[in-house]
Length: 421
Image 1: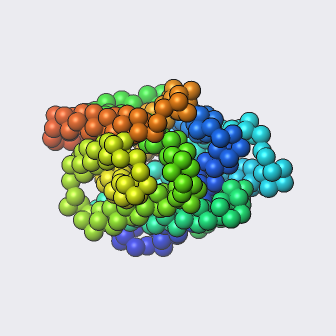
Image 2 (image 1 turned 180 degrees about the horizontal axis):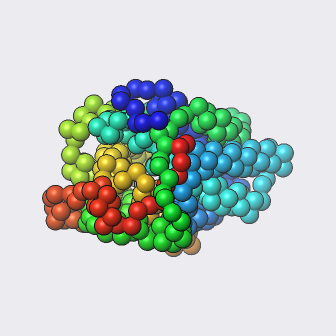
Image 3 (image 1 turned 90 degrees about the vertical axis):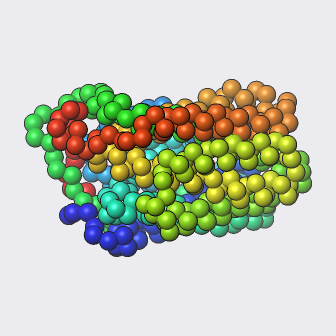
């Protein structure tokens, strides 16, 4: 099977629908999990440790990405969704039955879900560009982001209502069901096959090293994971302090769900704009604008930590996050040969994610001692520094190298590729 000739094709539509319903469940669960831990302990620091457990396995993502480049892509995607679905059902049903769930159980489930994610993330990133024509990657990323964020918007609103009226466990159960539905829909998606490599397979570490050598061919590609590191560290600072701030201000879980919903609405609008502009939107310029803009918005939240301002800023933050993420993904997908996508995106995911658990573990002892405005200011400063650094790197490499041609010339050792998916 070859890559499709048009954007709107059966496989792309199924992928959008499957991703949307999964995002709906995950959004409900994000509200529910925060208030499940916060409601049982009353401490933002404990919630930070739970988030760190979910993100910690990302340190092993490069090895997972090397495996992904050897496998039919649907295998890790379906297996990861089944595991996360079962975990969601177990945690939610246990919480419903016991009332108060031990924090170690929640953390263990978060850790196992994180291990599933280190295979699903690179596999999803490698599969997505094969669902659409190469010339439509920018538009497809914009559409995918817009649809996913629309589902996330609805999920956060539903999550706030469910948590307030029925309790967090119900939303967590629904998240588990959404992962199982995703696993059921994925077999309907057909992906173009990858030709197998003749000869013996090199060791996993050799495959990973080949991916790293490929990334070093471009300063922009090498620096992209560091942008993710800054972005994720900044976001996690806001994620762990905002629920408690919402409790202090009065709106509580429902107010927090509105905050998240507005963030999703901004991202959905930004995704629509990106889909409309397509290749006309300069990817490196959009990423710089998103980083610098989000940094300034975090500083506004630090200066004015009141509910109406937080809601307005949330809408703009969502717009900025999508503006920097979707074009950056399109840039990497177009630069990197398909047989290397799993490894390259796993390196991006690992370096990006290191910022989250490290930040959470560092700040967890002091989260309850200082006001939220301090952490918003720190997040804004990180984003501004990252944005300025990205501008300098992008200006230093105005012409991007042709990595596809280099792989064909065997300048980089060839990848081990899987048979048709």
